[in-house]
Image (cartoon, rainbow, N blue to C red):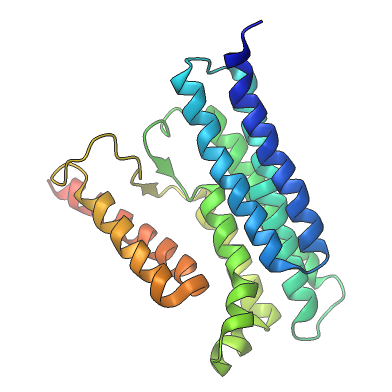
Length: 234
């Protein structure tokens, strides 16, 4: 029995387990703990692929299992978080909060499409589900910490939350190439964009805390669009 071949799948299942725990916390409106376990699941999601490449045991089973785990950790949980935020926001139709699960549907479609899209081996087309999940899970934490009345008004308004939901589902599946964050060797000339982005991300998180997460994702998308235009002009 080759134990190494099972290591990546065990890590993937731990990612799924973290997602299940996060669902329970999100259901009970314990948003900090939900954020913590989704972050841990995303951390594990990175390392299952790392160990699969390290041990040279990549498999179709691992690929499918990875997506199934992500649909819970990075799909169901953010949809449930948005459902909870809409439920607690401005009074509206009783069915309105269920629209938050559009995020889950968009995440599921992206994950299925990712498995069959041969263009996304070294970079991404559309926002990866883990990044999108962190943005959505940061919103109730931003709301809790903010002293801005404008921010409170926005994040407690169902229609604004619906706009975020629709934008989330769209950007997950948009035909927008996003640069890879993998740095295979320390070469500033070759990975200038990635290094600058990572440094700016650290500063955003230090100064803006949870608000820094949606800000850095917006910066990531904007820099990718600028980078794509520069490449076309070369």
